[in-house]
Image (tube, rainbow, N blue to C red; front, side):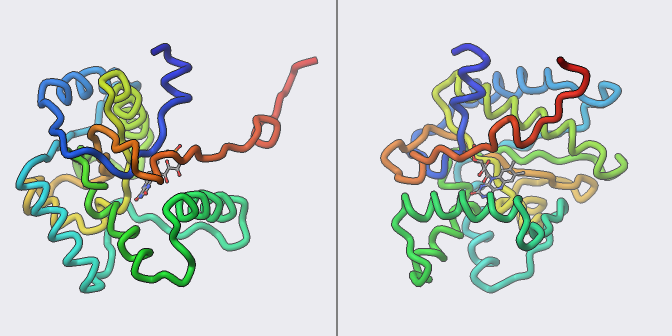
Length: 224
Ligand SMILES: Cc1cc2nc3c(=O)[nH]c(=O)nc-3n(C[C@H](O)[C@H](O)[C@H](O)COP(=O)(O)O)c2cc1C
């Protein structure tokens, strides 16, 4: 797969088969992903890759917290998008696409709850990659670098037939990851990436999210 094809093909995968991902493949993905650029080559990223019983315990504990309506308090706070903005419009559009594919109506609170839980379960992926950063690094500067490494992981995964979904939902309750994945308190948890073999029968995995046309987001200066 060439680079352009990989960038075009990558999409968020929200359900996976039960097949485990071999550790040596995950290792290769991380090895290449950290070729990402970082400011002053500071390489601020740290990876904790969780699978098996421990990942199941993390999923279960996240869901217990969600169901008990524990207040979200991610280290990387995700504020809501401004009302009536183009950003909110795009958010609503992808939600409509996904809910349409999944046949989830506005009124069906039960199905909406089940859908909501998926991210907290790392979409039932065989593994989850948790990226953290040392608290000594001034924040949010390393987020840019971690974003580059995250995209590299998602692209490299395609080379092995793997799918990914980046998930803020999976880091909503950082204490769960600190405790069960043994991530020291001295690290801020930045993002999770679910990774596994895609379940192509899952309707939401057929989604192709939309993008603004280039003309809407680009200003050309100094061209004839
Ligand atoms: C920082 C970040 C956090 C995200 N968190 C979630 C999440 O919690 N749950 C989810 O279903 N998707 C999540 N996504 C996936 C986005 O919804 C997705 O990338 C976007 O809708 C575009 O779709 P695509 O990835 O299929 O191109 C996240 C993506 C990013 C970059």
